[in-house]
Image (cartoon, rainbow, N blue to C red):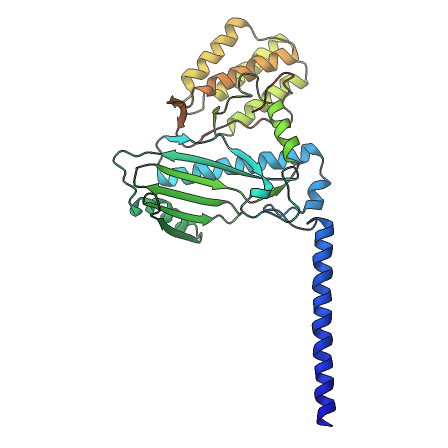
Length: 329
């Protein structure tokens, strides 16, 4: 009687293990066949959902992610120092397979991640671990979990790392040679990387389409200016109304901190050349003047661009006119 009970229990255990194994194999096969369709990206979007989005919808998400990166970078920079920072890049769009949290089924076409690196070289800096304190204080104040590490392989460097509540990875490294870097990196996002890059380039002004270091001040008045320009373009304003819109746009631009002189030059140039009344020419004259005025928001030194926090690359809107002739990287 006892032996039968033991044998019955053994059979039940064997069946449980067998069914569990089969269930696991089925799940693995389904996930593999679907190519990670139900895997969510860093913004909570599944691969299947992203695939069903129109290109303009994907572009709006791309723009939102890029702007969030700039906002977070500015916030982190200010917590460390309000002085000038150098640009190691203009904001990168990397292959999703190389992301920090790459998803199953991701490749160089269907996914991407964003990153940017800023650097500074404070006078007399020697990479002391205490130089991490301002950013650590920011982490503590905002309730972020963080870690501090030290590397002495080639030179002494200390790094404070954290992940924001919305999934952005932050690394601030101070080195004994006085070179300090702040890196902000996103998780992996689903989206047609090649098409999104192309659409962005097509909407950049010709003189900036291949400029690796263009930048713009991070204020919402720039968006308001664009809205005025599109409103002018879409409603076929006459010359008198076009001048009125240009005057309102000039007032908005004049409010941007640190850019008044350059913006005034842009406005004077438009006044001398005359504001074109046709919709395409009217938009381009203001659009190009805006980019020309913000071009001097940064200081150039040894082939690098330096700017205070709050200056970034202008991200073209989907509604912006497409540049017919342009060059990519």
